[in-house]
Length: 309
Image (tube, rainbow, N blue to C red; front, side):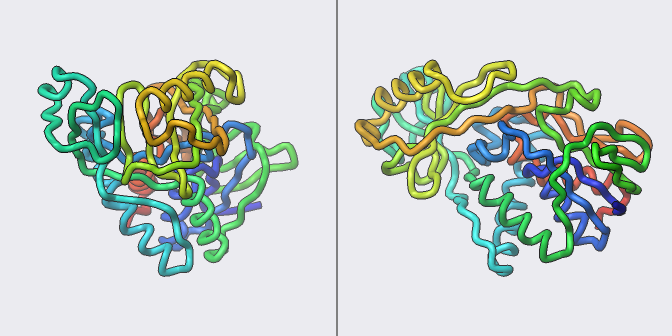
């Protein structure tokens, strides 16, 4: 198999980079190992640069992503691919008078929160990462970009080594998330768990204390835990935390019907987007902001490859 660019990893970062590369006329091959625990399939899709505490260049990157997604989703919709999203802002709830004063949380609560003293609204929103990935993959198929289900066992200049053979490529892009350590990247897994409930959701992402809510497919996404290591699945500790958090904080969720759980490995480590070898590029260490920073990451990678524009 041959391509100008071989993208290893078909999460949001990999598929978005492949989409932008293909739009510029490059031949792209997308490889995905189908690993259980891939972050994209469990992610909240939060677009909240200010509540996430970003600053400097990363804040600019987050704001770029927020604007980019509104244009991308309109473009995908014209092509027949509709993706759940909202851009009405994000809210942070003050749970004490001290927080209210410190955060200037003077707006009324947009959603009932027990103990809430007011809220502050920031520019932001959310996008359903699983739906976005499916739309991008469908668009890529229409552009002639193949998705090959195969696990990369190694990379070298101009090659991705597979168990069944190899892919020859001018450029190789590693967008493998928490599995970056297998390729010598400084990243480790941080498992996140989330709960899906049937019930009324806030109008957009709502941060309150140690967790948050946002709309998801007609219900409510409740997130999220953070635990290091490769232990998979959602365990009793996570379920108990979500049950207590939702019940104690949100009156509208008392007695809400259980719809399901999600879990995935966030790539924890220093954020890195750059060249790691001759013609080999990597994007890693995005933590819980992979969806938010994916547009900036793709733009940066295209610039490094000399194909931006």
